[in-house]
Length: 234
Ligand SMILES: NC(=O)c1ccc[n+]([C@@H]2O[C@H](COP(=O)([O-])OP(=O)(O)OC[C@H]3O[C@@H](n4cnc5c(N)ncnc54)[C@H](OP(=O)(O)O)[C@@H]3O)[C@@H](O)[C@H]2O)c1
Image (cartoon, rainbow, N blue to C red; front, side, top):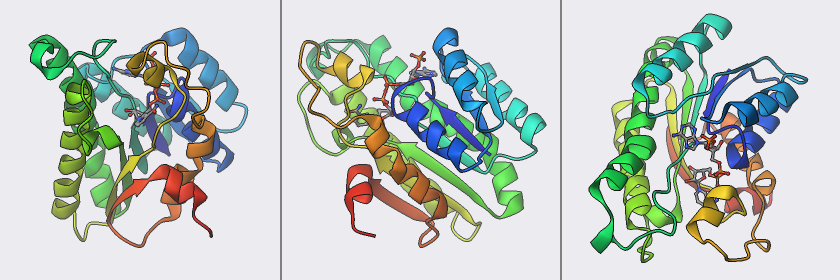
């Protein structure tokens, strides 16, 4: 089964839809209860779904998610750390980024993913198999003005993933970093208020890359650009 954070809309929901079609059981979370319930109701037509509303940055919610997943499914095979915090919109330059805003970004985008990883790892280690996917961004690699808070959190998540993979070498647990590329979603609209994003790909065009990763056993670590993965010839 797969635990997917930020699964009520955008990329997370589209990954969940494709995993459901593969018969993967799902444990899903997002903060907004109504939208998460709608997603769970739709997906439950296709697979077993548990949906728990809450904030991934809340340690008690993280524990509840994993405990519920284990109780319901017996094991967690895949963790997709997809939920993310952009920070204030419009995004300020670093010169004026408030410390509490940066702390919140880091809590959601770095601390929360690591906490979930720490909660699922014992089971993955003992089964000698598991897949952890951390969703990052080119903003974690390139220096775009005003993207410093979010971008530095994604850079931290990427490096954390690299070190984790080195620490897990030989355990059978794979750690992948995925940059989905620009998509027309609520988060991107908040990042660029007033800009027409209708020419960008929608997340349904990107989500198939995450299905390919389920079967990718070529390396225990990988950094993927999802839009290249889905457009690459088979
Ligand atoms: N869109 C892009 O162009 C783009 C580019 C590069 C990388 N990414 C990355 O792709 C991933 C998905 O982004 P998206 O564009 O699909 O975003 P989105 O459409 O805005 O969806 C974000 C999802 O995460 C949930 N979420 C946000 N904060 C949360 C929290 N603290 N706890 C639990 N759930 C939370 C949201 O629901 P609630 O608000 O109800 O909690 C929603 O389900 C993110 O990691 C993002 O950084 C996106």
